[in-house]
Length: 242
Image (cartoon, rainbow, N blue to C red; front, side, top):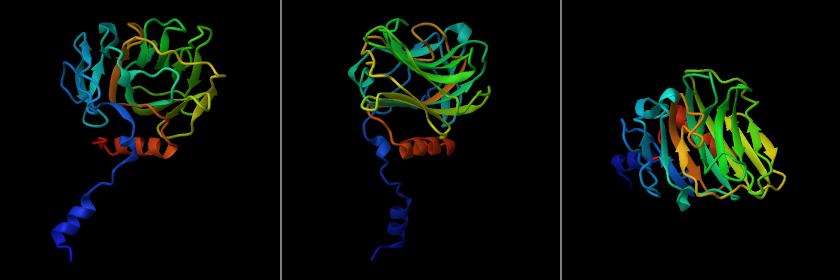
């Protein structure tokens, strides 16, 4: 027979989430400043460029980025951060302070040339939408998935973005706040695998973020819709993955 204490312990334990499977990066971004640690333990800390501060986030604290100060976090390309023409999924919580220009949430590449950029996700000022963009190893086309299901995002509002590349299905996809997916075919184009750094809040030294970013995660696989919904629900509840 279980004692009352044992029963309470059993009921209080959270089941192991499948979101832990294939997790390559987890930036909680709870630090007050300086380098930011990867909670997954797969990579070393991210460099703080131009004194990024912090503010209240969706889960704990978040990194606070000011575009005129060219602030960002970055990490040199390593195996755990490499994407290229594989399955991968990112989830990010973002909060825009200003929509006066393009605002990059995350990006990886050497330059913004089509063959030199793996991917980026941003707020595009001209279309007033969040986007997910991949490069092309052949140097021919960007492929852009635009969050039309959400429509125009507001400032001072938290949004959960899930962006992914399905290599077998030849699509890129974006879901905001657990809604329906906006998807587009890559027409077989291969995402470049570059030696470029991964940057939080910058597109290869340009289009800086103005606002807050929190809970950045990378999986080297395609998450299921249920897993995306779980990640979104965790954030809404102010609950870290671990």
